[in-house]
Image (cartoon, rainbow over all chains, first blue to last red; front, top):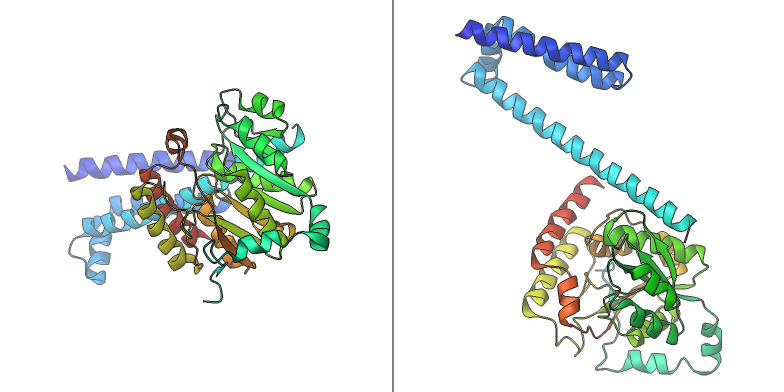
Length: 108
Length: 256
């Protein structure tokens, strides 16, 4: 069972990593963005290959189980991404307004 | 404290009224050639906008209507009533429309800018009083529905909601104002140039107060009368919206 989950995580992470590489090539990701995603998925693969690492890290941090550490980390990452997304959305809204404003001012 | 709004003498003391009366004579002639522009943001207001425009014109305003992509005949009705109409190609909300109004008014060489709701809840007479007060030497004037004796007519829930938003605005931005959500406000040209509007929707009212505080504009409030008809109540802010605005205020505080 554990083996099955490990395999699943590795396959999915590898797939996501390949997408990130393709997007970098296509110019849709900046290098910094690519670095972030690549690091994320590589860490996921490493942890899936040797779960002991995660357990050791969690005991060092004083968190009981390795899975708990993974869970906490993903929540933090998700919150961070959500915040970034909101800021981005705010900017896009602003740009649309600027666009609508300029059109309105041009032809009254 | 020094960032709080200097409360203009309320109607009961009569000093504001006295001030606008004393605008006669030489001072009046100097003020008379100041270009007064009324900014009227409008979204589906074909029923009320013609009267709003005519009344404002009668009080000496050049009227700019910002048609926020209305689905009805707002633009045509407004043009017929004698306003210059700027139309957003897509709906951007009150904040977006006000921002466009400021830009348009400044491009039209406005000396005094007054924002007026299109639903007919403001009296053109009050808009003139706001403009007169700006002319007497302020950069921003808020027409407050909640000072003086003219508060009757505002439903209780709305009064309470306004109070909460006022307190929150003070806590977050340090500006004391008795009616942060008022749609009737006046600005000098210099004041308007300093105000930068970023929010797109109803929370713009609080943002303007924030900008007044940030730029330390010379500000006052005067009492105005709000006419609450079934129509304007339907079109105005819902109670739930107040909660949304609160969230937005925190967001503004956080991200800027």
